[in-house]
Every structure is written in structure tokens, then in C-alpha cells.
Length: 251
Image 1 (cartoon, one colour):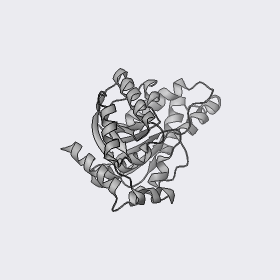
Image 2 (image 1 turned 120 degrees about the horizontal axis):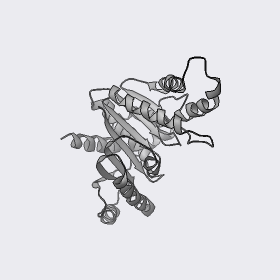
Image 3 (image 1 turned 90 degrees about the horizontal axis):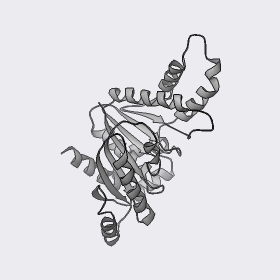
């Protein structure tokens, strides 16, 4: 069964880039294959990983709702969706990618969403690890039937609203019907020690392990701006910090 890492936080905290760095670490150090799952409607994970995506789960959902009355003879909705889902898994060396894409439209998607969740559960047996880049706030998981999360990273920065968001995430995950084994708070791009201490003070009441900060990384920012894959990162303060944290979790 795959180990599931999920990354969330307020929009603008850099959670997609940190998700990419976690995926980079696992690609380089984990023994088995992994799955990157972009669950953010903004769908930027593929860009920072440098993996081209032609079709998303959202596209398939829309197609299915429109095509359900005209399916080929003998083909059920479940078979149609499962065939389409296999097509949207982008396969690369050691890391596959699924992009959720746009949110639901005005149609009825309950049946389709249930099949998508069942397919997601089946996928877990094919991978050693899964990293999920969630949409801001994690509220969407509270509305869905989902599987467990082994490690949840909640990203904050110097914006006090990101700390408020972390508090809401702590409450939501406490009420979820499935398990979150371990929750960690990770400050991103906070280099001032006084600010870091203040973040730690304001989050002391949360049921999360405080991991400190991932430093500002000018080279990484330049690569993202240029549209280059973060798999190409070599000497990088941010990547080195993620490598250190991930290695500590294995001890």
C-alpha cells in the first residue's frame, strides 16, 4: 500500500513548489515508483515538474456527463470512465502524474465522482508513494469520501492569514472520517528568526509538529520563472532542506 503525503495551506504560500520538492526527493531516494496527484484546480504541479499534461480528470468528468446517453453498445459508464482514467495518467521515469483540473460544473457528478474515488483507491496498490498537492485550505477533502493520509504538510508563511488557514485545517482534519496519521507545520520562505519564532508561538496550540522553515531559494525561483523542471535542481537550499526533513521522517 502506498504511503500518502499531502501538502496544503493558504494560496500563495508556495505549497505547489514544496510538493514538487517532496516529489523530487522521493524520485531520487525512494526505491519504488510514485504518483504525483495535482488536486488543485489551478493545476500548476505539472508545470513545475516539467511534465506535459493533455487531459485532466475534470475534462473526463465533463466528457462523461455529456456522453453518457451515447455510449457505445455494451459499454457501461464505469468502463468508459476507467478507460478514460488510464489515458490521463501521464507516465514518466519513476513518477506518474494525474491532474484533477477544474472543479465540478452545474451538472450531476455524484456517480462520476464515486467512480473516480474507487479508481484512486485501486491506484494505490500500484505505487510505493503518492504526493497530493491539494487546493488551498483542504476544505474539499472534508466534502469527499477519501482514503487515509500518512503525512500532512501544512504550509504557512509570514502572512498571518496563512496561520489562520492552518488553524482551520487543523479543525477540519480532526473531524475527517478517515485518518491523518501525522500533521506537520512547515514555514516557507521565512528567513527572519524573529518572524519564525512568532509563527511558532501563534501555532503552538495546533495539533501539528513544527518543522521550521524552508529557506528562500533564488535559483529555484529563477527555474520556476523560466518554466524549467524542478527535477533539474542541483545545489539548492530549499531542496536540501526538504531532503533533510524527508530523511528525518524515515528514521
